[in-house]
Image (cartoon, rainbow, N blue to C red; front, side, top):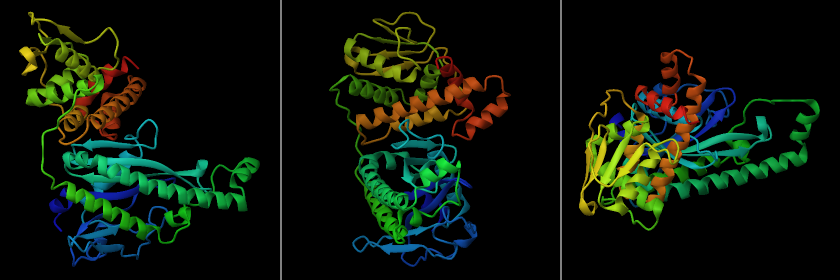
Length: 419
């Protein structure tokens, strides 16, 4: 299978954080061809790993292949890769799913993108009980990766419940093994009495769950997710419609409409607001003007009376960017004025745009994703405070490792003033 064809498909993977090797992809499931063997011509893109936790298959296991009888599609699960490009994309998605792209509650689904390497990911992190682990639990994630954000965003309401079901099943199995092992010999009491901070090597998924066939079971479950994803890609596209039934939904509807109508100006306009620039909203349509005002509050660090967004009845002479809304809210025009155009890429702005332009997604989904972006932005801004006296090149390298880019530094600096 060609690399471009491979990466255009959705890939499902399970990842974990190894205490010895860091974030690592345990195995991934992808669409294959009927004549393909999991081990066929893949050894050049894999490395021999002796860690049972990182490589529960073992170096000689060929993986699993199954065929869906109705569609004839083949699903391949393996810890080997068809190319270095695919390997790097999955490893980067794995790293971010277990480090920077985590919801505040730790065990929740989240969507993130990295335009630099063209990956878009739904990630669901979770913990499994393990009596041999530091803290008696290990950190895992199930991720769905694709090269187009629209594919995943349209599948959110389908994939996430399926992911949750798989994870709850894994957690129940791990809890039963943990309880059984603690009843036989309390590792918690041993560590407390003898001050043992860490014990032994990381265990394989089969050992943690007490199920030698768990990899085959996950292959079957991941194959189902792939088929759901593939069907979703062929649905007829339609424009997103957002009912304005309450303040949040009307604000989200306004933000989506702003993004759609000002089109190519959105990146410059959004970045101007995100980094602390003032803007105006001018309209005779009071209700829609209020919705736009509330919508743009999502792009500022604090929602207070001292706002960077100025709502006015008529357009006056102004030097700042302005959203001009025609009578009845029929059309939104963006007047950039002195808004600076930047050649530096902003991953924050790109991610906002991808979410707001996604088709067939619910207002609650958009609201949740924008809320996640804000929360992560505030966390990164706090880190920016700590690095204010560090060389800027080193600061850039630090944030780039977490999926930000040079065009995000001025945004982070502005938000750090309000942490």
